[in-house]
Structures are given as C-alpha cells and as structure tokens.
Length: 370
Image (tube, rainbow, N blue to C red; front, side, top):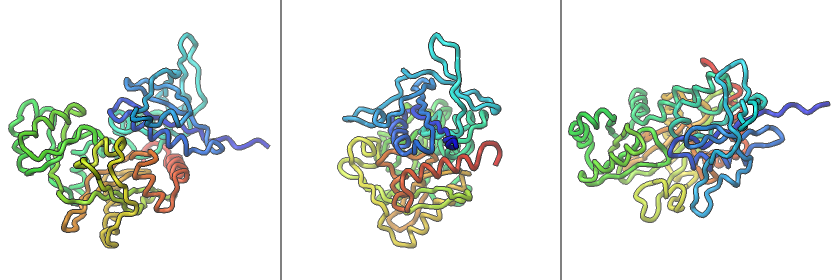
C-alpha cells in the first residue's frame, strides 16, 4: 500500500522590502518547524531585486550570525509561478536548459514582511494562480500594510487610538507648511513612521520641533507616504495574537508586554533583533478586566480589516488604563524570539502546531471570493 502524498508547501521569503533579512530569519524558523513526514517543503527565496530562486532547505543558513543578517543571494535555480489557475507548477529556468517544471504546489506560506509581499501583492499573484496561501487576502494585507488606511478603518470601527496625521508625497512636495501645521496639532513628542514599513525601520521619536523635518525625510527614505502619531507617554506596549480556529473563527491569545531596556527610547530595530534590549513578558501582568478588553479588541481589529488566518495586534495601555489600538500585523515575525509564536506557546499552541494550523486554514479557505 502506497503512502499518502505529502502536502507540498512552498515557503516563500526574502523579497524586495527593507525587511528582507528578517523575512529570511522568520522563514528559517518555519522551515525548521515543518514536519517533513507530513509536508514536501519547497523553500523559495525572493532576491532584493525580485527574482524567484529555489533555495537551500537549511534553516541554519537563515540565522543572524554575529550580527550579520541573512539574505537571498540569487545563486539558486530561477523559478516562475505562472498566474494560471489551471496549473500550479513552478517553472524552473536553469541557465542553458529548456525550462522545466517542479510538481504543483498545494499551498504557499509567504513569510514575507513589508512591501512587495505582506501588502497584498503576492496575495494577488497567488489568487490569480489559484494557489491557497497562509494569511490574509489582498484587501486586508494591503490595508494593514498602510498605517494611514489601517487607522482610518480602525476609526470607522470605533476603535480608540492615538491622534495621527498622514503626509503623502504630494503633500510634502506641494504644501510642506500645511503638512507640518497638521503635525503641529498633535503636540510633542510624536513618532514619525514610514506608512508601509515594519520592524521599526525608519521610525523616529521627535521631542523637539526642530527635528521634525529630518525625521520625516528619514521615514521617506523607506516610503514616500508617512504617518505621524502623537506619542502615548508612559504607556505600556501590549500585544495579542489572533489565530482562526478550525471553523475560521478568530481566537485571541494571552496578552504579552514589551519592556524596553537600556538606552533604547522605544522598541526599534536594534532592540528587536540585535541588542537583546527588550524583555518580552508572556503573559503580561495585567488586571483581568484589562486583559479581557485587549483580547476582545484584538478580535475586533482583526475583523475591522477583514483579516484571515493570523495577525498580531499591538496596543498601548496608557497611565489611566485606557486601551488604544496601535496597529495590526498580518504576517508577524516568526523568528524564535518573535512575540506571535511566544504568545501562542503560552496559550497552549506550540510552534509546530501553530504552523500546521496555518497551513490547514489556508487549504480550508482556498482562493477566490469568500
């Protein structure tokens, strides 16, 4: 009697965004967790210029080693996923050879952070190709990637948040004084952020108006669209994971808290990945009523953006105990130190089970209108 065919999972990582390296690190953890007796795993790297290549199935190659970040170097065999729903083959393009095919993919796990991956672009390609994938669809991915759009949807859903202003490229080019005047209404300090970046890249806390233009330019180096948020001073940073169950119903994890240490004024890139400058407290030491409120609001935020599969919802709890939504991440970090796997571990879902549930959810949903 022949063994049942294993589910073929393509793990896609790297990409064109400034979060290329963190995507690689996350993918290493996912590759390590996938059960090779259940899954036929195809690691696919996207180079920084957008080429698809067949990568090594070696999770250790994707670690941060001595402060050196991993990357997809493009040396692997080139691949193409045709946008054709009648086939799921990956076309293999080896130099000098006639293009061949790699047997069809059942599901894609796009471990991509930032633009050209987490923003609805690869989700659109996979919808066109008819290949199921882990995580939110085109709309939610795009909306959650753009902090300005995301905040507008939060406001529409009645979710409390800090005041903010959006500065578009056109605003900055044609009416800089007007843009700065809108920011001035927020008071100081403020956080200046690229609207469509993550891992705290390009973020500056501004406490003096003289530093505002430089902070906006620093954010614009990552994205011409910028969001400026009023700082919630003395607030606690609380996070909650959301994972759909077997019936597609979103369920919240326990809450967690980020406590930044040392000279870091906020949870920036170095504090997250390089300096070990933050304590991730799981579960967070919160009053039961506040924890319940955060968990309920996490599901509301998930639904406000029409998310699917999974998300990490980030909140502030201010000095008066008010809970404010900050943002939702539709493909949160999956590294060994990332908050999303840790909160679910504490909730009773270990890392391999978490990955299994996400693959199963993607296959259950399929593609198309839903």
